[in-house]
Amino acid sequence: MLAATSRNDEFTTLEPIRWGYGKIDAAAGIEYIKRTTAVNSIESDEPAAESNLWFDIIGRSYNSKPTAPGIYIHSGKKYIIK
Image (cartoon, rainbow, N blue to C red; front, side, top):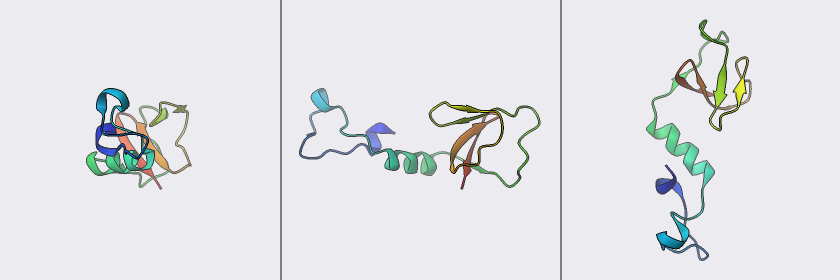
């Protein structure tokens, strides 16, 4: 994902030894994940019965369904909350 979405500019050349893939473009990275990963939409306010634990994409955990828009993991599945 980083290789596909990082950007080069006048400060980061296409010199991988020095700059890697360039500057991270977080928005492009999230769009890349959304395009390339199968995602289930949440249609219900009720989380799965086996666990109430949710995780966001940077690893923070939540004891109930998050209300903020984002990409989350719950019971081994990826969800987008809009």
